[in-house]
Length: 212
Image (cartoon, rainbow, N blue to C red; front, top):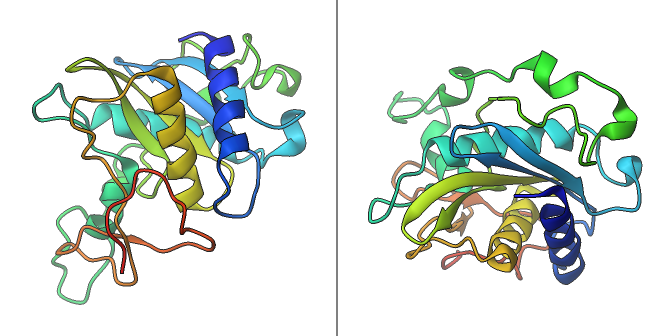
């Protein structure tokens, strides 16, 4: 994926989405091997969206790509991980501690000239930033039945990040045959529900299942 493709997609998706806090976004795309191939933002300049969200977006892309498989087994979104990683009194959450098992490469994430962040010369390009994120905003990318990478979005609520990532994937026409990697918004996310907490202004969230 080129910088121009991702830049156009995140700009269009952010403009179309009205959920969350109406913030701008960082978007990062990774290849199937987890290398960053494009970094872009939707705002007018680097500081129009939270700077911290650049590396969060990269980790979301890495997570979704790394936990998704070719169809028919298919995709797993970062939003789907939330309910399974929370601590519980019984210790019964099967993925508790997952986010600590694959740490972000700080040198890859923070290196370089800030003026090049989000440009075709972003210092993250070609590097494996790593990281594991367990809330909404990361989706796998598909060419037909084949998983080819991931996209991560960050800059607003986790629900808005998922919503904009869902729009980006659709714009790029890199949707899996069965997009089961939806976000299930619920007031009580648990391993049984597999849900994700609700967010402010989440009614129009794209790529969601039934809410309660």
